[in-house]
Image 1 (cartoon, rainbow, N blue to C red):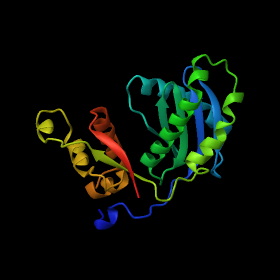
Image 2 (tube, one colour):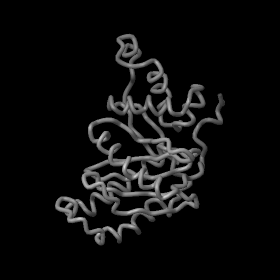
Image 3 (cartoon, helix red, strand yellow):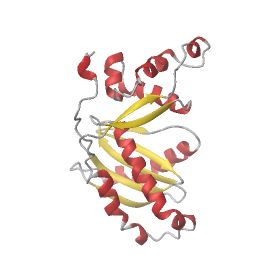
Length: 218
């Protein structure tokens, strides 16, 4: 485990979004995609990936919080809102929470711009072409702002009684105690000496309980 060096640095390198996709969940159609990274992906894998996104989108809309998918050499991050799925492939070494915040911004902007069109969408992709520029601006051409760091913050105080009553796992409680707005998800994993995926699982439980929020620092 690390000492003080696991706190959020004053300048953390930005994530690299290899590719980003926007899909309409009901139709299963990808209405926009942008590629930024150099990594090449097999077309068959992309097709299967997009198909899988629709299923994950349905799970998300049913209340399951599936945000990050292991996709071999990359991670896939998902954001679902108002029947719109925004997904991105990112390097495994990058901060998935920062990626999720960026995807959320893209999703919000897309829904705001095309809310009325999506209500009775006829499958025409032309109206969405101009949104490429907005995606580039939000993602900074695939590279998040170098100082954009997203950290988890617990709202209020989490009582240890929740663990004693069986309403919260001990590991989730331990993670909650570290969510004070000064540590990234990866830093929390380092300090607790546990796997990153276990921290992410705990944070999803805290989000489901509506006691965790995210803030941008730096």
